[in-house]
Length: 150
Image (tube, rainbow, N blue to C red; front, side, top):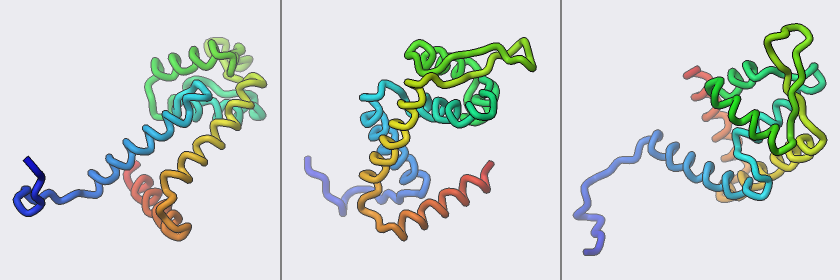
């Protein structure tokens, strides 16, 4: 049976439908692009934040939870995986003996830099059909929607 557009029921795509479809595309492309680095997008974001916070004396898992809006068990799992890969290490927090601070290793710093380049390149390919002006407009609209719903 062939698809006949005139006999098919009307389906109106919503912004949410399109955003969901785009999210699936972005997640898939990022996952494929990051395979070589052997990290997930969330691990890359966590690692990049840890690298950024190194000069501020490290960061805690609770701060990472807030940044990523994920549960403490999820951050613990990611942190342990990054630690097992030799990308971060933990040290006791001198200001709070109950917590530890996260720091990047030299390899973690390198991978963090590669992560950023990899994501930028994947995004460049995803949005290649858009002009620079369209990409800027999309960024502004999405930022506005996100901020108004926080």
